[in-house]
Length: 279
Image (tube, rainbow, N blue to C red; front, side):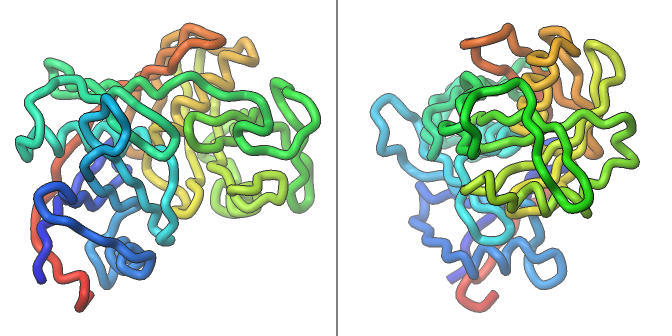
């Protein structure tokens, strides 16, 4: 059976999006790996599935699958595309929606200029809540990787992040060191590895090796985690432009116990149909 899909991206972080409300859709890990393949499938960093909610007060349920087939808790760029998708498909007329995710509720909002803002929730720092193996909460931790020990800020924004400050993000060992951090034994559910260069107090450059996807052109939750990490270290102001390989996101965080807000683009690339059984 042919199933409709929409190809979208948020600052270059690209998605295949399915409407699981109009047509019930079941995705297997093998389906997802084949969809994400850039040679034999459609090609994407993540597959997004829109479903009816089970949580009280939610407008939709939002499921996120990485290119390796694993389901994950959160994706900030995907959340922005989610809003654009449900509005374009006339699944809602609301500008701000309540969306159920594996990590809890998020509240993305369509802005007048066409960009989308997402309340990403309050960062979690306690190691057990990331999860991360450490005895006490610290601002930075020493993490042993092959040939060296690096200093990382560790936090969760619904999904785990390890962020390190580097002098030049272009020279950062994202694709050699990133896989070791992603699967480091101190992160039992793996982790997104961020590499942040401080340009000034309101501007950073960032690359992210994403859990289950490799380096992507943009990582929304990674951008938020980087700003939080920089704020915790006293390096950044409360509003920061995050320049990623695929574009720029605006992130703001007022401080401890406050939610992180992220604003950026959400773009539809093309639409089509696909036969999952014969992919």
